[in-house]
Image (cartoon, rainbow, N blue to C red; front, side, top):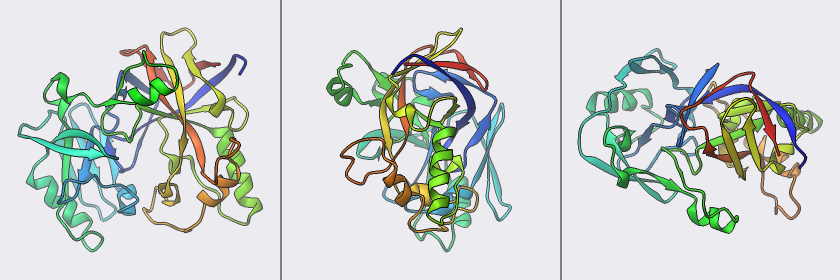
Length: 296
């Protein structure tokens, strides 16, 4: 793909995996993605991570982040405040899509709050974990991702880490691609959807629809940040969840329509939207809405 410029239109973080996101004007970049992204995760009684696939109502838990605390706000009006100081306690081993990682339990008060909020929707105990390396800076607690996949992509030199994100530090999506999806939904007599359905970190504009799937790298003009767009993001049923209500208004859409718009030959009915990305350089820098990104 020839070098073209895109504009950074939105920045999002999701401090608690599966809960609502926070729309930012600027965000610090770390080697593990945007600062404060996916640093907490809710797990069930067996320590399995909870997602909107299992509990769609998670989407309706709003999140606020201040200099000193994380605040969770439920639709019923209940709220709880957690200090950003990491909790102390034993390591809790868990997995994200089969990938082992560790957290530290945030304690009984927040567990009881979660169980009250999701009463009637989930029957077993719920716990909230903080990513363990936030509390204990140990090399063994780094969550390495993608080395084998990167080698298959011809980039064996790339080493990447993330918190509790599914598999990659960043997700980049395009407003123009969303416009194309919504036009297709309207033509099929379905409701349009918001970008929040796709839970991106970076939303760009200025490229043709789905052109982001053919980009290899995004680089910040006038800055040092370089992001490798390593893999188109295959979408799961979470995109059916309304991210305001935490409900599923349509059991088929937008996934069914998205499958018809695949930019890849032989996709086998899979649905793609956005690209996963890793940080090549610029950790410690900042991204701001309005930044120009050179793509190639």
